[in-house]
Length: 262
Image (cartoon, rainbow, N blue to C red; front, side, top):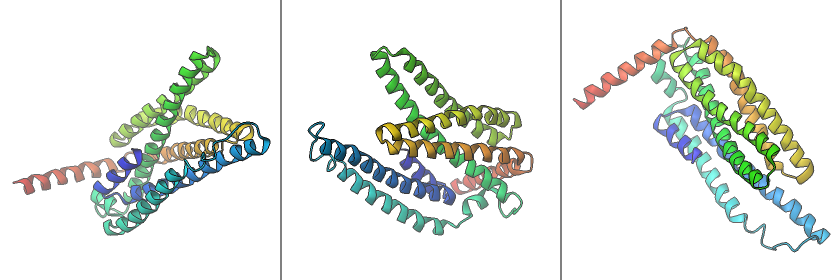
C-alpha cells in the first residue's frame, strides 16, 4: 500500500527524485524477499538433518510464488520508473516551485530529500507499531508484564516518531525554527530507539538466524539518522527566500487554474 501511494504520488506530482526513491525501495523489497527465503531454508535444512521434527517438504515452495511475483513486480516498476523520469525532466518538479532561481535550487532539494526520508521513516514506524501491538497482546496473554512494558515503551517511541514527522512537515512549510529544533532534539530518542532495535536484530541473528530482522532495523536506523542530519541543514536554510518562492508558485498556479476554467 505504501509503495502504491508513493508511486502514484510521484507520477501525479511529476516528482523525479521521489520516483528514483520509489524504484530503489522496490529493489530493496526484492532483496528483502530473497533474504526471507534464505532465512527459512537454513532452519528447515538444520531440522531435517538433525531429525528434530517432521518438516513439510513444500514449505519452501509455498514462498516461491510470492518471490516470483514480487521479482516481476520489482523489475517492472523499476523499469517503468527509469523510463518515466527522463520524460519529466530531472529538475522539472523543482523548477515548478522556484522557477530558474539557482540559489534556491539546492535548498529546495535538501528540503525535498528530508520529506522523502521522513515518509520512509513513517512507514517503518507504522510497521513497528503494528508489530509491537501484536506482541504486547501476546505477552499480556502470557502474563509477562515486563515484556509488555518494554513493548509499550517501544510503541510509544514509534508513535512519537510519526508525530515528529508531522511536526517536521509543518515546520518546513512554515519555516518555523523552534518547531524544527523541537523535532531535532526529540529525534535523538528515535535514534537511540533504532540503535536498540539493531542490537535486538543482531541478537536474533545469533540465536535464531533471523537475518531479515537485522537488515530491516539497519535500514530503519540509516533512514532515521539521515533524516536527523538533513534536518540540521534544512533548519539553516530557513529565511533564505524559499518559503516566499513557494507561496508565489502557488499563487501563479491558482491564477492559471482560474484562467483555464474561465
